[in-house]
Image (tube, rainbow, N blue to C red):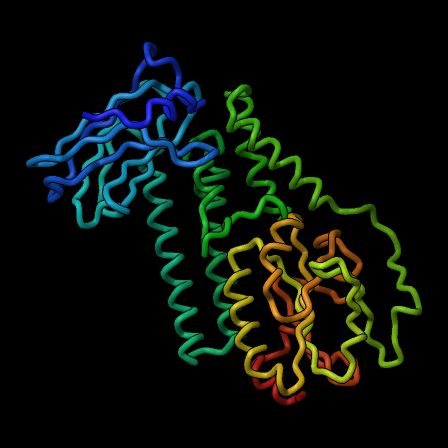
Length: 383
């Protein structure tokens, strides 16, 4: 068995002194004769290699490592295939898997949390496949943009409700609940702790449980900080009468928006009079962000030359992330630092994100997303 990068291992904060208690991972990988199997730690700062072995014959292996002081996450990797598991006490975890379906067809004994992590992994794989199928249908003109976004929102909503009820709130003190918080769709967090107040509650439940049991753990402190920032970002302001300055209401009745773009320039919605404007409220740092912007880009590429403009209002809590994501978009991208509690969201009665409105060439609000059956047809009718 070959040790890898001793310096990296020594710097890894999640492991205890090498002379202390150990945990052991054993098992076999069938059909993997001659392949390298790696044991890696999934730390907050990334993946750290711990050990490796070249598999022979029946593919048996055995790794032994210092027991972490609090629940931690590890993974077995062969080529680009990965099995995630957790260790939360002195234990022996046994993992058996075939090489071909290494990441999905494995079994775990000795760790109930690791079995829950497998369940979550398989659910996430199915969710990603369903989302990819929807995107393929959109690109193949089998469904419209409105059906795509509604279907994606439904998929995501059902997934979150299942995971929230059965994995997070059911046992917030477990490693599986923590793992669930950081699953991704389209490489974005499914549960958004910075922009969604309901998702903040999920993070808070796990943070409270973890902090009560392991108050000095690095993960406890990190999760607590995420929750504090999320609560600050999504805190509902004190109720007060909504006052709209008269100079914000132009003669057509549309309410103006004036926000800064990525270069710091103030961009006014009413300055786009003469164009058909798609007004969009969205969060870039969400699972729906990337496919939503892909849909907008396809519309823009097709109809910009005919007079379509997009005025996109980001409600992202992370300004730097928004600037990086929006830097190369060809339309007007602005950000409202007040997020979902901004005056702009209130006056346009934004009920969900992303949310779309169509404005004609005379600055008149003609349609909102829920009233649009075919977005492309609606845009063409106004051009």
